[in-house]
Structures are given as structure tokens and as C-alpha cells.
Length: 267
Image (cartoon, rainbow, N blue to C red; front, side):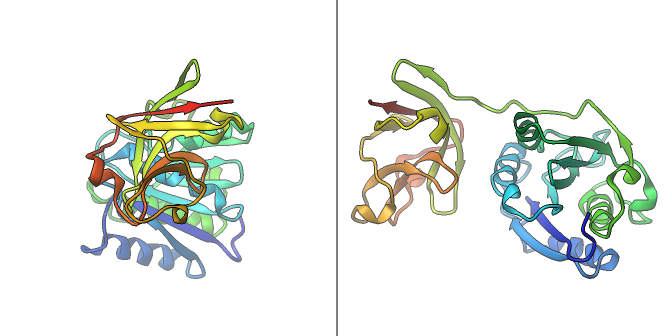
């Protein structure tokens, strides 16, 4: 770890109204006062482990090496589910063992990076009084702060090899079509698929469809069409999305997570 200039991120389903995020930051600063805290998102849909996994995994690896990422989307808080800390390549993660870190494990495994998973079962790295229902404050935040302050990962708990994983939907190919699904809808109503630029492999996109709607117009940037136009394009992280220019495609088309998303490719 780099205790002289540590970066910690927070991703939760808490929102900002009730002070839960603020008190987590207070705990972190109490242990690691020189930490640099970054909010990735606190608008994950309540208890939506898949969305939390999606949002964190698509942002975390842009951060400096040895950043510590706290993820709290934890419907099983207070039960037998384990609190864990993870090293994946040069990044560290702290959160519940409920599958929310599945894309992180898969990224490390695909890249051949070091992957260590620790059950954070040492109370000396927690707050003294632990609530059954707020491990974000009482376990995850202090453990992350200790890591950021220079405590080695191996010291905060016991290694495990059986983390919980969730099923991540994969696109399939049928002829010249890739068949996937809607995996995220962002603040603007842009509808993201799980079909990546690598699946298309440099071929021309002939059209897309999402739900029961065909979207034949392919662009490189939103501003290539007039407001109100429905377009398809690659997102900033190279997944195929459908967007309404200066509008909300999800609301206009009545789309939701899990709806079918198909991309037709040409030569």
C-alpha cells in the first residue's frame, strides 16, 4: 500500500439524504486522516447487487494503483455472509461477500493478475461497537482505512478461496447477430448492453434492437443527430448502448434491466 497518499472510493445504495455516507467518511478520516475520498456512486438501486457490481467494476480500474474501493450494497447485512477484503491486481476492495465483487474476480482471472481474498474476521480492525445493520460504518470503512494507512492485507483477516459469485449474463452469437441484454440504465436514460466492442471485432454495425424496438441509426457521438433521435453507439467504456439524443431512451421505449438487446453486424 501507499500510506503517504492513499485514495479510497465509496460506492453504495445509501443515497445522500440520511447521513450514512457522511459517517462512513468520518470513520475513515478518524483512522486515516490523510486519505483522499472519492464518491463513485451512492445512487445504486436499493439492494441491487448486480447494479453495484456493474458500476464499480466499470470505474475502479481507472484509479491509481493501490486505491481502496469500498462497496456497500448489502441486503444480507448482519447475517452469516462474510465481510471481505480483496486484492485484484493493483487495486483493493472491501465489502460484503455476496457476489458484488464477481466482475472484479473475473477481471483479475482473465488478466492473470494476483487475486487475494480475505475474510476480515479480526475485530481489532473494526469499530469497537458493531451494529448488526451497518457494517458499512462499523467494519468496511475501518478495514479500508487501515489498509489505506498501510496495514498489509494479510493482517486484516483469514484467506479464503470460496467467495460468493453471482451469475453475470453473457452475450451469445447467432450468425451475424450478437444477442445480449440490458445491464444498466444511466442517469440520462442511456440503455447499456453487455455487448462489447471486442465482440463485434471491427465489423460494421448494421443495426440494433432493444426490447421490441429497432434502432438502425449508428453514430459515433450523440451530437451527430438532432435532439429526439434514437441512436446506437459505443459507450465511453466500449459497450453498445441505445440513446435518445438530449432525451431519455429508457423512458421513451419503456425499457428495464434484463430486456433483450441485439446487435446485427455486417462486413
